Length: 228
Ligand code: IYR
Image (cartoon, rainbow, N blue to C red; front, side, top):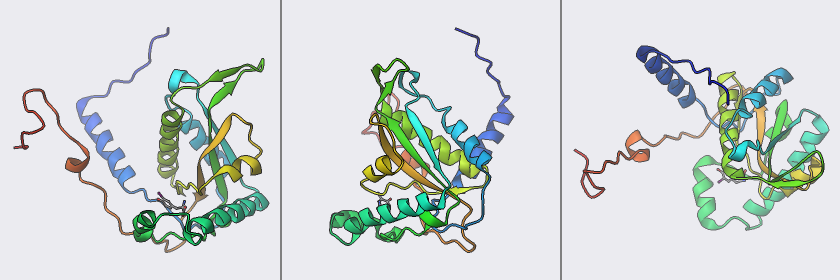
């Protein structure tokens, strides 16, 4: 073990930092209209370094971030994603209750942003680890670990002034083949990354209030007692 170099903040700083980070993250939106403007690869690398600080089951770090800047691969991803999504939206693969839920977002099978963005990052989960000697080690809490890494990735991109979309063109098996990933990996999510298109529009959504997402539970006031 080593000593944790923890920085203790004073109470005022804690409140300032808490409010500032909340304000920053409140301004993040998922973007589906991107500018073709280039973005330095070093920024994408820093976002991946940040995402890879996520906690993971038994510290297996069961993630691979595949970075795609090549125009030909991006258009192949678009073609394959749109083929799957046409099956979903137009071929009847999405059940009606799912289509109804997507209605306010206005999403369709058309995914032109996959060719417009300077970068696509595809996040793969490693269901098991292959050691240098070729043995396999089962990983733990893979979805939870990779989900946390995805959240940090989205936060890191927003903090550096970039936009993204947590995109899951479904099913995603084509990404394994196209990006030549090994048998222990499965696609988790795809992130188109860039600047929003000028005048980019997003759905008018609201976030749940604190009282809708938080429950204060204490032993002496059971859940049948209404809040004061
Ligand atoms: N994968 C489809 C459908 C879709 C599903 C959900 I859940 C969303 O929040 C948004 C879209 C698509 O990408 O269009």
